[in-house]
Image 1 (spheres, rainbow, N blue to C red):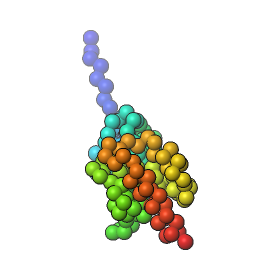
Image 2: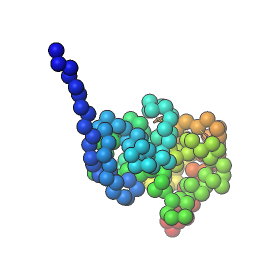
Image 3: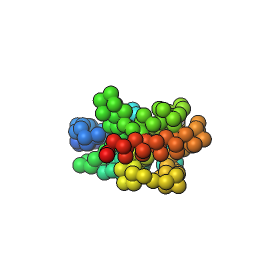
Image 4: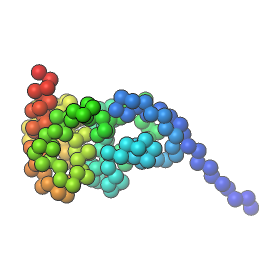
Amino acid sequence: MNAVVSVQRNVRMTLRVNGEDFDALFAPYKTLLEVLREDLDLTGTKHGCELGECGACAVLLDGEPVLACLVLAVECEGRSIETVEGLARGSELHPLQSAFADLGGTQCGYCTPGILMTAKALLDREPDPGRERIREAISGNLCRCTGYQQIYESIEEGARRMREQSQ
Ligand code: FES
Ligand code: FES
């Protein structure tokens, strides 16, 4: 009997990440998280549970937060992907990043990229959310370090700085 050999072909596609087109060649079963980190060298997005439970891998897809460990990269062609690497403008931090740095919203930092992206999506839609909305928005992002108080305060301060910038 002949052995059946299955050849998994790579796919080539252009992915638009942080406003830049990346030509990528990858196996079709790879998640967006794997392609970002392993093929595009964008390692700011963190690799956690890979089960959709920790939020460390959150990025924005067409402006909405998604868990990159649960999305196939092939589903992302032609869509806008935003990662933590796209937040700063040159050497100028995004207001959320500066607020996290100033208020201690980051300790070990592992959860921070996912929380920043999830918070950005909220604040882009709702510039002045209350504490409850913030709590609800990041309820899928686990942090083992901060106890969340500094994270909530950092997002509130980031929101205030974003509003100030947009005036
Ligand atoms: S790594 Fe994606 S949710 Fe944990
Ligand atoms: S700062 Fe360490 S997990 Fe959140």
